[in-house]
Length: 288
Image (cartoon, rainbow, N blue to C red; front, side):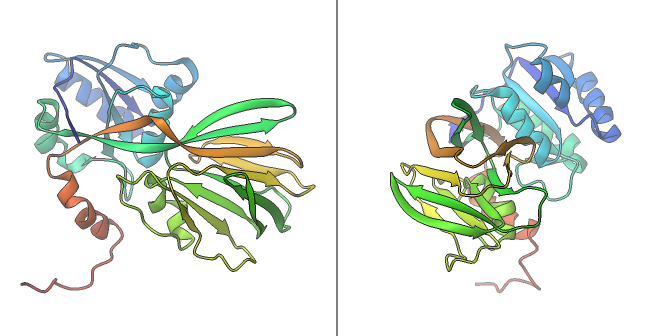
């Protein structure tokens, strides 16, 4: 992990659907304006129109994990780190709960923190003789559309046909996304430092119910082997349609990461924090 240095210019991006998030953004801006150059903007505005100030050193995200994911897409490959403040429920990607803000925020902004780098997926969609490019910090989901029918998704690994998934679709996730939709389907949780990807079928009739964890240099191609329109969703909010003969190429991007500001003890405390959020523990732990 790299050292995080105190920022000069801070962008506060908030979930505009939450009055609490907007109020907290105003409160933080007022508190920081004497020591930093600070501006505040809704995440929707930043996605549609870009940031009000391009030369930022830090994004403070206010909302939940969905807001953090949107902040990553606003940055679009920039090395600028994100500090997530959680107003949601679990907040896997957020670093500070809003209730701890007064106690913790100042120390982070003074540089008592580190930079954690998370891998992303590079996605190329070949559709109607054109090519579109996306990236995913969490995951992308290829699923059946509005009709309640099973679909066939042909999967090739490293240029070799591997399997045709028959069911409701396929989720491909990063280590970050391994605690999201993939986990709800029974997928494995990867270490956040991993740059592997997980392929997890949705309600599949194949025997590969546990899914696959692929090496970081693997190339996955998914092809819609179905006459029905399929839905492609990236990080839970970018949606497009896939039709027969369209296909998607997915790789781990080895040139870009999404960066987060974390506490100095983040690495040692990660699994402890995850266990608490997932409520994995019952009763007191045994002492040694």
